[in-house]
Length: 388
Ligand SMILES: *Cc1c(COP(=O)(O)O)cnc(C)c1O
Image (cartoon, rainbow, N blue to C red; front, side, top):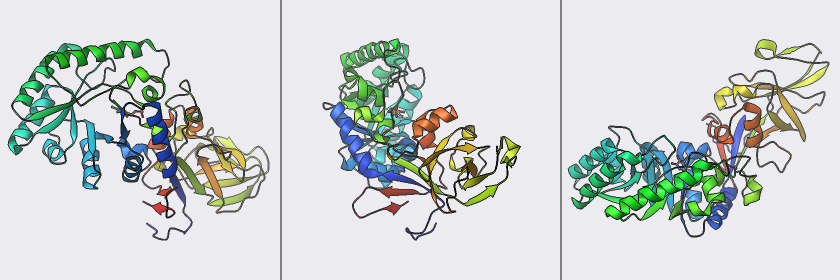
């Protein structure tokens, strides 16, 4: 990678860590009674896991949340302090490493409990585990019918000194759809499953179910801890929930590229693979050096917006692996001029949400899929920008 930070870059994702910290503080204010878990899985939704985790900790996050054990172990290896939880385990997973790293490890079923107990026994250490209830997401977690066995066996392992059940938790299916009947049903189910476990003798430090929409709009879901992901990155979980500004949130990622070429083109010119765009008349074309290898959705072909020279433009024709074309309508920016694909939106640029609508997906996917070939440039910190 080019070590000269001032050199022009083909493309970059600017990550505004000051905005991220402000978002953490705004979210904390929405859930003042709860501890805060910054969800940094999937490379912090494409924003860069370690810089985001450090910034979130600085803004007061007590917990970090990851999906995989490997993510959680990387956080600990990088020296991140405090509690780190991860929830997506498969048989044969790195339980010993997780115990060594003091992770809080989610257990959704009997196979996982057996493996973590075996690892703890072999090491002579106590494993921190959190029992996950499937209260109606129908994905990971223990269904109510299997809960008594999991609770009983976890308590047995706790009394034997192999585990400490630090948490009881669950995850929503439809919290981003205000008023969806499953929200109340899941809350009732969660209270019942927590009540059962506590009645049997579990004394959890934390009970938690709230994701971003729960944190923002459903105070009754906050319990002891909230786990926002997308909102921390300044993106609303759904249009129905509201716009980021409604909650004092600001998008953290701005995706930019420098035009690789600007050229005059005649009318009737087929543009990019398949010729799905044909210039309607004499015009100018701009070449943006980003493609689906960088996470630009191919479904954005012909539809997604961007800002060039203060004007909104639309992708002309197909998004290719490394590049796409924009019809500049006769304007003549020079090669090297900046194109802003998406950002906070207050400079006239589109948002990740606009890209999601154009591409038939959700803004979560737009930011998370930005590829490793795009450098993340960290801004908004004292001492200027750094690149990772
Ligand atoms: C991803 C995830 C979150 C965060 O969800 P958002 O909708 O991004 O707030 C919280 N909890 C679990 C278990 C997750 O997998």
